[in-house]
Length: 101
Image (cartoon, rainbow, N blue to C red; front, side, top):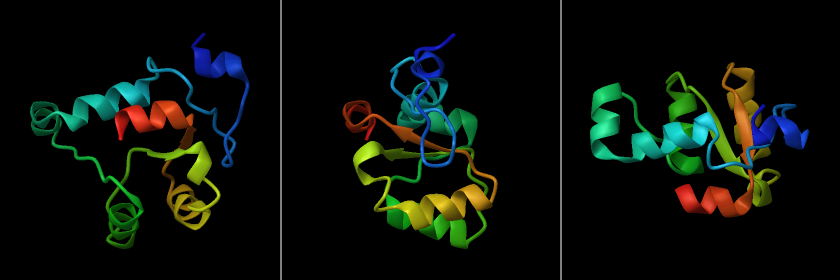
């Protein structure tokens, strides 16, 4: 069982909080942040609320969305819109979020 699952904490959308560097979504984000990882997969990272909102408005399918704990309430409309479109939204512990953003 992952550290995230053991923590039992849930984010605002009922999904487990991400607290571990070993989380699959954190690993995916790191891979996509490298130019070669993004080229191989054909995926990209929308970094920041403006780009994420534009992607949602353009009906770009999102695999997942990450938001820091401290900014989750501020971005509730954006994460809610993503969740309504079927995109899993995860809250990430602040220190971990800042290490990958």
